[in-house]
Image 1 (cartoon, one colour):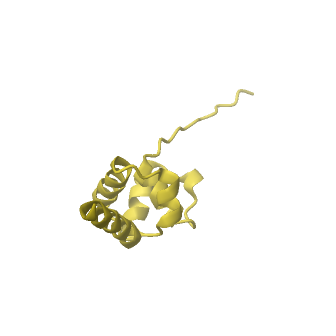
Image 2 (cartoon, rainbow, N blue to C red):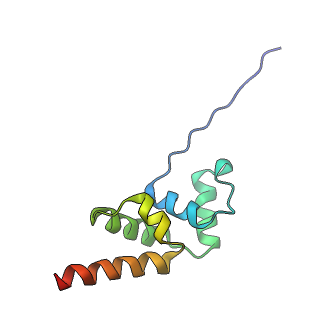
Length: 91
């Protein structure tokens, strides 16, 4: 008997990693990009905004692991960026 095995590879972008950390109850191993987008929509996360904010944080020198430790939602991420911007403006 011949077995057919299907393998699927999913590439996660930094914004996806941040969201998956925030939504720790999500079974990430079973998600495809479409399901990830559905979960973001269900939880009220604007993907474009999340991608933009994570990109800004990474461009400003933030480390992805630090972002994951310091944030749990969009408000945390925006506050972190606002705080860093204010510090940069004061210097």
